[in-house]
Length: 162
Image 1 (cartoon, rainbow, N blue to C red):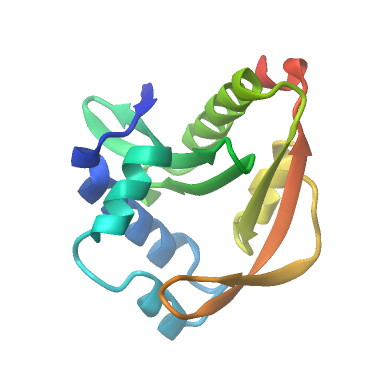
Image 2: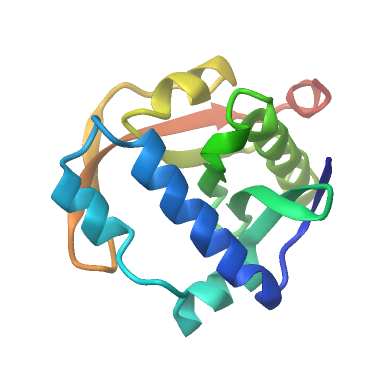
């Protein structure tokens, strides 16, 4: 397993993993029509490609991208943690979150990290030390809203080491 900073050429693979992860892992937590709107399209937009290039890190296994995650150090925000469902429960989500936490520590030690968890992902983040219970609304630039849980985690040097 290799974790590396994404480049613009990774945008299609990230887009595909994002979509399949949403379609499979969020099913039953959100209505099907919302999942369809959320994953609409076959290729990334220029804005998505720019997002990938600026914020995304990817997990590769045998040269194939199988998971991703975003870190915005300006806002101390983790976003877009997606794992290919064929590779779920192998520790890839944990690995990318821990990697992003370590980067965040180098950018600003002992800061809280924030995220907006999908309803299905909140238990995963709680296992990693994030806290938050209140359901709020995520407003997508695609023109829809979905329930999420705002969470945060205080980062300390000991958190990033294991």
